[in-house]
Amino acid sequence: MARLTLRNVVKSYGIYEAVRGINLDIEDKEFVVFVGPSGCGKSTTLRMIAGLEHISGGQILIGDDVVNRLPPGKRDIAMVFQNYALYPHMSVRENIAFCLEQQRLPKAEIEKRITEATNTLRISELLDRRPGALSGGQR
Image (cartoon, rainbow, N blue to C red; front, side, top):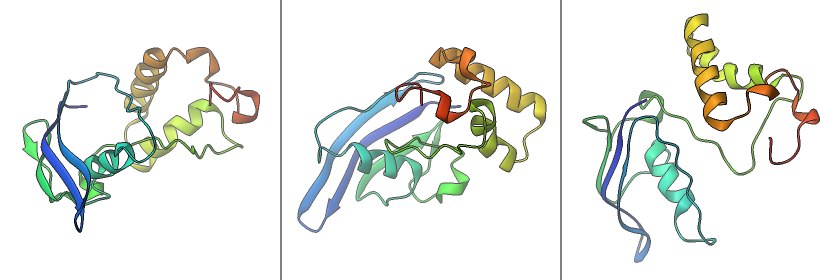
């Protein structure tokens, strides 16, 4: 992971300004959640960070690199949507590992990342369960 910085990031659709000059610093390994009413720009901001949406102004930095024009696949980040998509035939461990395996990371690195993520989220005891055996909050 790396530090994420948004400097006066703006997203406009014609005359409508969906995101108005957001400034944000998220430190390495910091856990952040965006909350707010419908239409306040949460999803748009996340989509801009991920590179799924072009920004209208400002800068997005990952580490020390401005990534405004970097395609999503080159940003080495991921996001979880409110309407999650868990593979029901896979355990929690397998669901978490899936995208890491697609990146062809070494097994030791995958295990390390799974351990770090599940410890941060305090869900280590759920690793062997399948989504159907989890509560809505656990999913």
